[in-house]
Image (cartoon, rainbow, N blue to C red):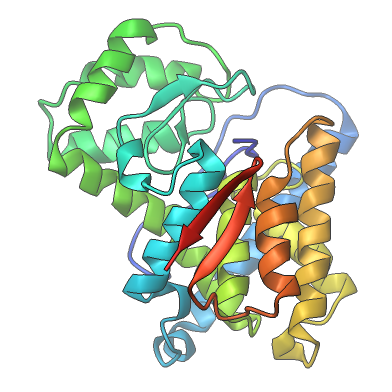
Length: 296
């Protein structure tokens, strides 16, 4: 995954977000500092939106959070991440994709270089101190923000795979996935007046781009699009807004890596949008990396 440096972590179900301090990789360029400042502001404003809308959100329909739609969302995301709808096979998956994020593994692609893998293992170790990954926490802290494998290596990979056979570690992955990615994305989409498809588009963007303080994290992308295009909640047209959002996500993807495959947008999300399937009604057919997937 191409992810920005982290700013936000949801620490309680649904809404409560807390900012934690990072030590950024030293980069003297003013543009870099400015980009981080803009993204940090965007993330902080999103946090405030969610906090102030807690009562409103509690009254809204579940949307993508409904059990059947959430399952569908993870099937589509699994096809984008690892070319499989069977996302439950991904708990033990771990590899280095040579994208600068170090080891990435698990159900959402937690990465050693982007803080969320460390957060996951710390949280899991708090509840299960004798787990096989606990001994690697010093190394995970040391490599955070880099693509280094120092102190990890084959032993860490084996420990991850072994731990992923345990229900408790799978539950820990689900919990961090939901609080860090799923629920903030879905709730912000609801506040923007978006239906189930729009909520999935936000969720996928949150996963791919990350809730970060570097330029082009999810929150900054959302703010840029909202500045140029009215959301449905503001009286805009839902399809027009979502097309603009996908345009911006695609632009960021290809700017960061010119050869980046954009199937997750071009032949999946954009196809649903062209069909007017704003509720992600099934049966559903989509293309990912040239392969056809179906959900009923």
